[in-house]
Length: 527
Image 1: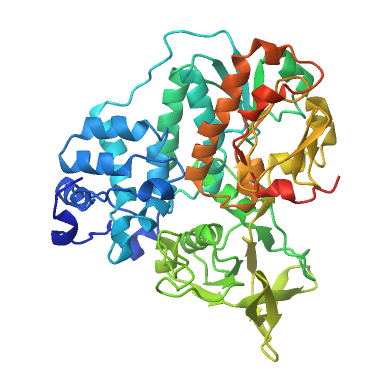
Image 2: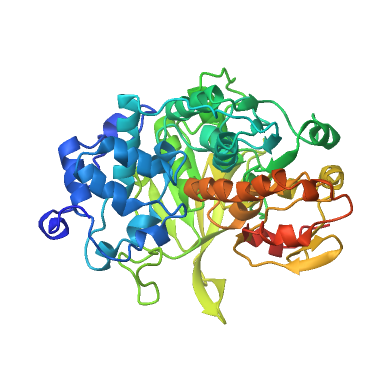
């Protein structure tokens, strides 16, 4: 693959970023496009490694060595054809994916990995420029109808695949625009929304119907969905944020990260939001609690809003600069990383825990009280012990909570139990298994389930299960889940015997539908 000696003769050339002082004052993307000549040279670095571990690292199983070689040989149209075989939306994953494929690249054992992510993004952009990506509606329709609840990457990937199979697909979205996480969770400087709208226009031209401002189970009863559709897939995303239950949490000026990011994304879309409703960091002392991707998104947003100062807290200790002995290749490397947002400024504080907040007489937060902690591991379980006499205070005007997610739409059904009952989902959260026609079946923690309930009309997919605890914002995983879960929908639509099932599950057919059950099923749901 590539040049025979490319990985020896050609050094890594990282994708350039726009100057910090320039990009901090606008919402355009951070990265600059590669020059074609440089990109082809980077493709030449791909080795003929025999067993390409990048396949294992990529949740989609992208045929990475194939299109690296095609780029090196300037066969761009063949490259996009090969890329589209496994990835419905490479223009999104090429911008948002953290590139686990690069971490498992064989070249990364003792030198810099191939720039897989940048090559992927360049391939699809070249294809759009050349007009190779255009609407291709299915030539034959099956007459079957499918409803997909949720328009994030998982729901859209499933919709695309099901539509290609000839089924009539309708995507329902609670918000006023299609895209879910991609629309309102991802900041504009990470992916400009024109790239989202560009692909959505193609999906719509291919026959997919989008319905916004529709909350299934609330504004549209489940009975109506059952009457109108042959199958239903829930792909509601992981939008249920983890709270920080400490004294003073109720003070004004403390917000969930997604509340903050959504409002800014709406303004970037052109929505008129009053200053009273809008959350801004302008001229404020900001603390972001959480050191992950969501925290970095808040950091970059606060920079662009003109924050006075920014601290980002992380409970875990600072990662090492290089892989540790217990973190070998090709595992995802637990190392210290500097994103574009971190490069722009702010202070990162590790091994710190927030103890409480205090405020003024008007109920506005003014002070954050925290202490340093020491991480210990006993019997495989992490614990954090406060360091004696390490407490400190920090004056704050705005606190953003980016400490993960507990689930999504599916988890919220615990509150809206009528929807669960309407769909007759027999799920035993306490045992971490599924009740199928009265029988319990235990499922692995890393699986997601595709199944038909008593009415033989329900499928489960996307963030509500898988994304809640395991990389909730990893778009490439969501796309992969959406593609995998549709196998259950297709199997159901092609099975007349299963459609006639009225008292339970056809277990023989169902066994082929189990794909990946998420960690959230192992947690008690509070029923």
